[in-house]
Length: 534
Image 1 (cartoon, helix red, strand yellow):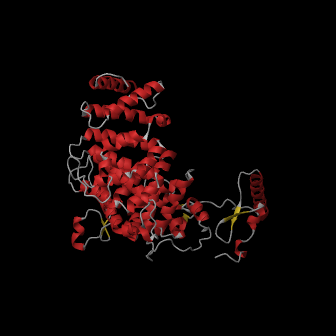
Image 2 (tube, rainbow, N blue to C red; image 1 turned 90 degrees about the vertical axis):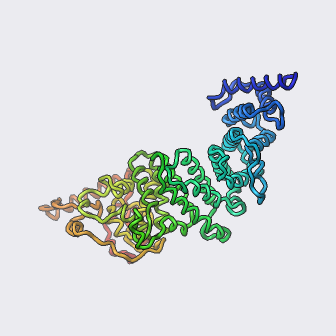
């Protein structure tokens, strides 16, 4: 640290910080900085951040915090310069230290510079993301409680939107990386009503929500996702959360149905809302579809059996968008969580399942003249994914179709074809069409058929799920000796493929699952001789 009058020292220190920012402002690694230069830089930063310094002003503090933010990008070198004193400075300048008291009356501190608060929050976000020590300090100093306390003051117009955004970003990071904080935030600090308040404040306006508001909503949804991960519908300790969770779902519904400045941000909101639905207890699903009486039905644009299904309409629209991208990466990152959410919602609520069935698997007509996977409808695109090489996606798509078919094997085969559904049937032991105990309470309504389907049904191939007619018998005109010869040729070919490890012939066991055979001749055994056959 240079000697001399305080003003001179401050000038030299700020010059050093500004030079560092100029050299490394656009870089994510701090290379070429010697230990002596780093120590001098940290001394200059500490001087600029000293409390009650007569030579400090807001711009100098922001500049010093910007230097810390740049240093915090370099994950591998954080331990070389970070210490608890720097953390305390960041807590003070971010304003979180003011809100750390639990149960106190939450008041805004006087003369807060939101530029300083924002820059300090950026530093805390970077450090928390990149360093385990900082994560532990955030848990120890109860940063999430401080954020919750400050969030209670968000209705005050003096709170800058960027501060709200980085508050929620830091809350998301801490609850993602420090698991022990989640339950404490939910049960002791009552985080969920606060998050619901933030969403309510957004949707109370009739104007289109801006991109910055969408970014804040996304961080709120991500934080709520982390907080709901420990929840189990069978845990009595979470019973007090029932009202706050149902209110949160109601606010998410309003968020999904609100108008947005850009379509891209609206789709992002739907994506993160869908992720959250996979962690919520089953009783919350019904609050996505509020009921209305008959007199109000005309005023509800998206009414289904007395319920407003607008939120489900938006989720299904997003499904149509993500299914347009057929890349494996999109299937894993976008299709997988969305289809999982739809399956969870359909299994949780009868009305949601019925509406999803209507949109995904409408009554069949002359489209059965094409293969189930051919075409651009939701049914076609989902059936196509039943044979994707991505095993996880294939499984969740099959689960969704199985659930909207009320876990009825015959109905699933009708809409997808036996070949497409074989993977799910084999996994669940349903290859024989055996009945299993449903995972949800389904109604007993029948699957009504259209006149077009009834006319074509006799010639529909159950394996392909397609109408096929006019096929000639390949064995017509053959003698019995010729038929026997061709059969032996087929058996020999299958035997060679089995010995080469290309295929593994199987029969269907008594549990409804494939059972490998040791020799292809076992395939010729009469399955009716199995006493366990249904």
